Amino acid sequence: MMHLILADSELEIIPEKIRNHPAIKRSKSLILDASLHHTAMKRLQQWQRRGRPDIVHIFLLIANESILNKKGMLRVYIHTRNDEIIYVKPGTRIIKNYNRFKGLMEQLFKNGKVPPEGEALMEMKEGSLKDLLNELKGKKILFSMKGKRKRIEEAMEKDVICIIGGFPSGDFLSPVHEMVDEIVSIYDEMLPAWIVEMEAIVAYENKFIAGKL
Image (cartoon, rainbow, N blue to C red):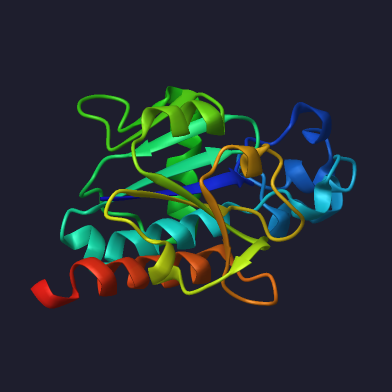
């Protein structure tokens, strides 16, 4: 089983500090989005990396459509910069339309789960990255340029927890380097989260299920 974590992801409700800014008032979205709220975000600390729900969306779409997920061997979690954890129920279909996806995230922040009634397809709880890692079993691999360069297959084990940064630039906010068993670098430059995700999923598929397809 692969557990895939998007850590310190830049997914958040618009902070109170900028809600009266004209750029915010013109927008109907409650989710901070750099493509819409860029001018207002300059009042926030670390504004250059914030407001990236698109990273979460692409990450979930790729995981959802992977062979590994279709085989029932993938579990996906989103950890946010504000220490919220989103649990995604296996088999959940991810909305492909970006604006509708943001609407779904608004519901999740408001109600703690979606749909608000009945069995939850996604559920949000307060919790740090360390809290999440303590719930899971398997070798903990962090993908980072600070790690040792090696082929991903060499690091993979049958039960594995892969941690990928959910931000466009910079480094992890959580002290994740202290929480893992191995830090792996797969390229000399910083790659988008979804590229690292694809490489990790395919490496796992090749090592453990390729002969069973």
